Every structure is written in C-alpha cells, then in structure tokens.
Amino acid sequence: MKKISTLALGIALSLGLAACSSEPKTEVAAVSGIELQNFDASVRHQDDFYYSVNGKWLANTPIPADKSNYGAFSVLYDQSQDALKKIIDEVAAKKNPAMGSNEQKIGDFNASFMNTELLETLGVTPLNPLLNDIASAKTHADLPAVMGKLLTSGASIPFGFSLITTPKIRPNMRCI
Image (cartoon, rainbow, N blue to C red; front, side, top):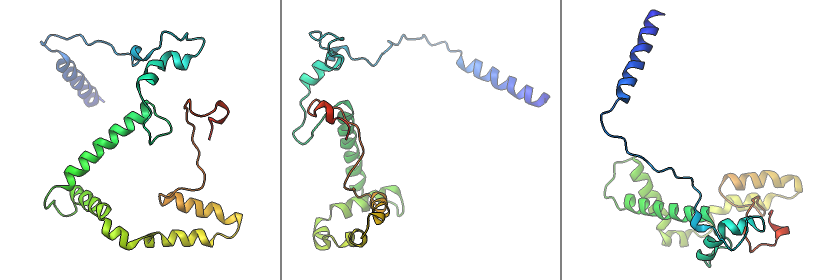
C-alpha cells in the first residue's frame, strides 16, 4: 500500500512540475461554432428559424447540378473525397512499395479499379453469384436473406432508410 501511495505521489508531483511553464500564455479566442455571417437578418427567427439562421448560406451556396440537396455535411463529404483521392493518387504513384505494406495494397487496389480494359472484358461476370441469388428468390420469405446478402456485399437494395432535409422536397415527403 505504501509503494502505491509513494508511486501516486511521485506521478502527481511529476505532472504538477510538467504543468509549470515559464512561457507566457497566449489568449485563445473562444469559438462557438455559430456562423453569424450565414444569418439572414431579413427573416425573423420566430417566422422561419431555418431561413433566419441559414438564409445567406442558402443564397450564396448553389446546389451542384449533380445533387438533389446540398448542405454543410455535403461540403465536408466532398472535401474529404478530394483529400482521399489525393492521398490514394500519391500512394499509388509510389514505385516498388514494400510487399504486403499498406502502400502496396492501396496501389494494387487502385490499379485494379482503374484497369478499365479488364473491367470491360469481365463485364458483369463478377456479379453473377449475386445475380443468381436474386434469381433464386422465389417467395416473399426468401427476400430478407437475399437483401441481407446484397447489403453485406456492398450492393443496394430496392429501398433505403434515410432522413433528409431539403427545401426541394415537399414538407409531407421529408421522411423517405
């Protein structure tokens, strides 16, 4: 017990001394996460809260032609996709990565994905096992197993579950 107390005291003293610093402290401005520049002062909060806090962002951020909705998370997603593409391109461009390394695996995966000649030659052949599973479903009772297999293989099923908010969808159709 005495050893544990001595050890705890030693750790506490070490941490206390490490926290002491002769460097001057710099003040850091607190950031709330609320971006006032996106507020639309022409809309009262009680009339339409969504447009009062997002009005300027909505007016200044066009929805890309290839998207049905666009928001802050869409912007973050697009930025992360661009960053991932850059990382993959840099790693895939490395010459002679170590066998079994992540660089080698990423490079090989990227090369197989970009090999459009092989993809055109194979066509849908790699999908035949899944297509056969779909064709083998004869009753309603067979569907859950087939849909589960499709989802775990990365394929889509005929319906999905999501909740989106966009002014382009009628209010009574916001839950899909």
